[in-house]
Image (cartoon, rainbow, N blue to C red; front, top):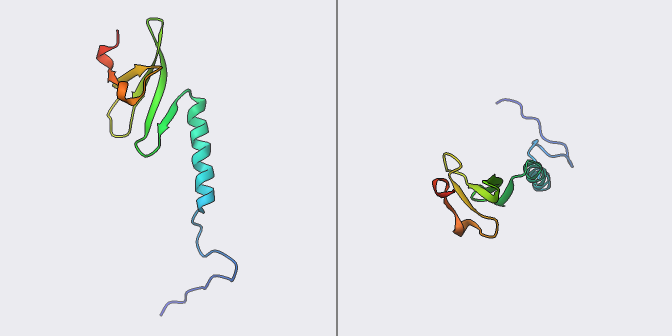
Length: 90
């Protein structure tokens, strides 16, 4: 039978990150994404908006996980329900 070292009392046996560490890393990632001008709208679906200027008009380009490319947009005052196909943006 191979020898297995037992963890010392008061020490964690693995280098698994704690929930607090993961939350801190996630918060740092959201801040970094925001510094690029990208707005994270929904973490579970990976929904993000990118500011864009089209013919002098400010709009949001919209993407979420699972979509192959940025193919949607919406007005600044609208959200996900107001998404329209990029081809419709004139």
